[in-house]
Length: 165
Image (cartoon, rainbow, N blue to C red; front, side, top):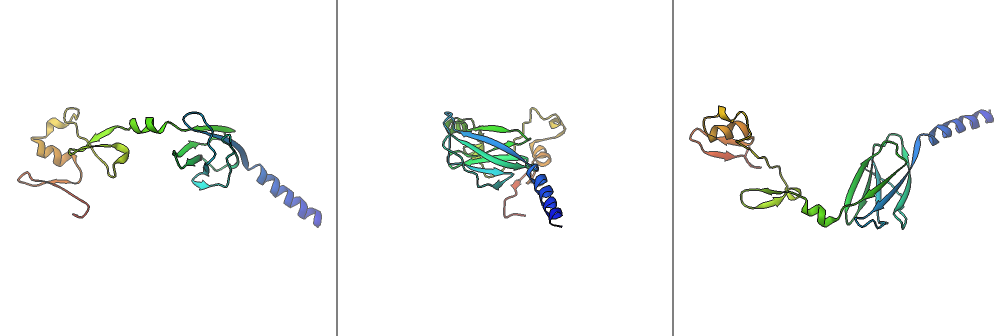
């Protein structure tokens, strides 16, 4: 009886061991310097993995994991899709370059970088809209194309805000 129990335990442990893949990752900054103050996530679940002084970490990844993310306080989160690769190098971009690549959006009263917007902005291009010739005037065009905007009979434009339902 004891041998049967040991056999069952060994069989269960054996299948559990092969249900994971060993993954080696490396985290570098924009100058290819290793980073050691890094938190590693497997499918948004924080792990207790330590990253050494040369930026390397090793983690056992279950088969169901589809993304691996690293987080640093200075650079933020970087995510890579995981398809069973044995290793990935995470290399952050220069923060100055990333900030300058963000396009600015004209709001009518100033410009804002798109990452700093707290709400969605839509743009209507009358010249590129192929159905724009079917509208009689600009008020009909706005009435038909812009959500959250009401054009009254005497052509007053009302924009629905957060407190006006």
